Image 1 (cartoon, protein in one colour):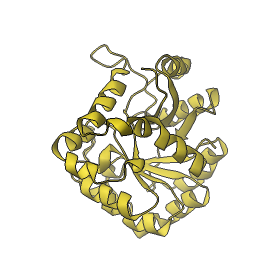
Image 2 (image 1 turned 90 degrees about the vertical axis):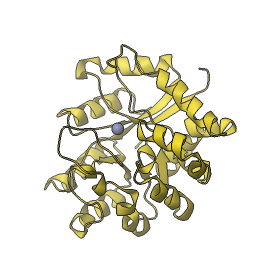
Image 3 (image 1 turned 60 degrees about the horizontal axis):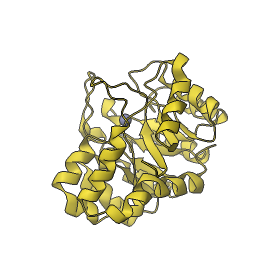
Image 4 (image 1 turned 135 degrees about the horizontal axis):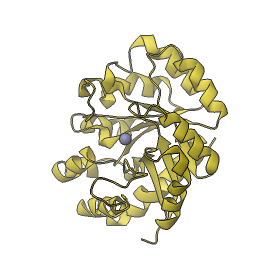
Length: 260
Ligand SMILES: [Zn+2]
């Protein structure tokens, strides 16, 4: 692969001591920048995000995991902002509606500090009791409209139960993007290609849920970049791959100041 890539959806699956390997991986596969996003099941996940950010501030968009139900969440927004973080990663599936008025102060603070919001959408295969009903793009609409200067990325194409909502917002609101992170995106591309072709392709960002493996099947995860390219070609978007794999994200990072 010789074209540059930006992956807007990776997680810090590396051990803290091995943070440097992530950069080796990025260099090997010409991945210019990544969004590194915290996850609830990794207790030191946010520390790993910070460690990676520190190592390569110009290449890492840092997105710690937050839960707006937690009482320290608002203070943490300021603390992580000081460390250069500019994305909030959410998993509403764990039991809250993002448009619940109780969490408005959290989103007001995030918007005030210039954070973008990237939320898991749709099915969440975690051991915790969890539901897709909390994590549909529609549960964010009031926030999209209340904070038009704030970037919102609805992951996994908005989810299998939410992709039509997600696509609708990309055609109606200036600040909403979808990401192509598998596996629900795979389902959407193969079963609803006509819908995907109806969205402005400039609003689509490439994500893999990768970095840093090795995965259970022994691969290091870079194959997913070829899968992504093939997935875009499969719906007739061969001429748009470089936008989705790189240019769109590059513009978003610039426009929203996501490198901190
Ligand atoms: Zn993810």
